[in-house]
Amino acid sequence: MPYLSRALALLATSLLILSTEFASGQPQAMLHSWNDRPAKQAIIDFVGAVCDTKGPDYVLPAERIAVFDNDGTLWSEKPIYFQFLFLRDRLQTQLNKHPQWRQTQPFQAALESDWKTFFSSEHTWFPVLHAAYAETSTEEISRIVKQWIATTKHPHLPRYYTELTFQPMLELLTYLQAHGFKNYIVSGGDIEFMRPWMAEVYGIPPERIVGSFFPTQLESSGGTAKLKRHFKPYFFNNGPNKPVAIERHIGRRPLAAFGNSDGDLQMLEWVAAGPGKRLCLFVHHTDEEREWAYDEGLSDGLKKARHKGWVVADMKRDWKVVFPFELPPPAKAR
Image (cartoon, rainbow, N blue to C red; front, side, top):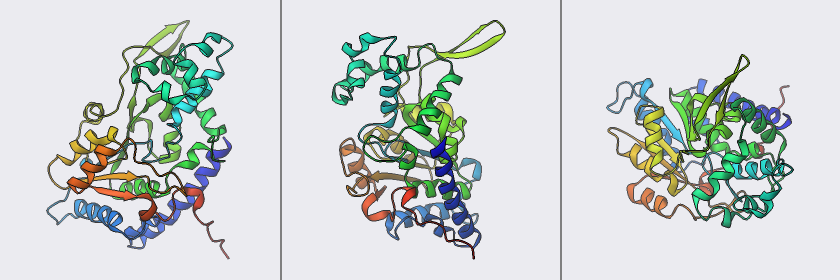
């Protein structure tokens, strides 16, 4: 897994710097890729308030839960969600068994990267999600995903997909963890696609990944037992389903929520409606030079964020760097 080794080295270097700064008594320095603007200060103020044992907003560590969307919040999502590029590649490896896919929708659209047709209705692409893993055990799915994530590069950037995580958000994950928070991923992405690599990249274990899923069923024979996915029903963890999934999976209303699109709006609204001090943050993609600049898919969420006084992290103005590979190399010891 050549890229993960390099990515983990970069992340380990960053975490070493952050832990040193935290030990020095200047925990705000852990957010060193954030510019000194209101978004950074809002994060610091919130964490300081809920961790102050003598303050009115103190929250016990067991109740410090933070939830993060993934696509567009923790890593890039252009030209399309990376999971669907994986699905396209996965279909291509199975064309010898299913040549009819070349002329059958929505398979044809996925194979040709015709995403407008592919997403014409969310229900039309459920068969592709199922076919990509049909008759495959969860262990085999994990192996396939790990191999793809470690060997495949972005179609428009010469980088592995996990190099396109956002350095400021990686620092935020570490910052919250250092202050007793448990971080969870709550994403519309398929849970079987996310779990194999997120522990290494985000430091979030599989049991804290909340995503979309097909049901699985135990199949045993000849002394072996495997879990295999079945086509229906499919739980799409997006929009109003996100609070439902959080309640079912975590059992606590989080203190903090981070997203970037209208699909995250209900999650942020639900978190904000809880008692006591809360933090809701929208990542706004405004940097066409270092990443992408776009507003589609967040018109309602961005409007609500500004109206409610939630934090809007403007990528161009709030982040010193976007990706980990933009960090300067660590100084060599003399």
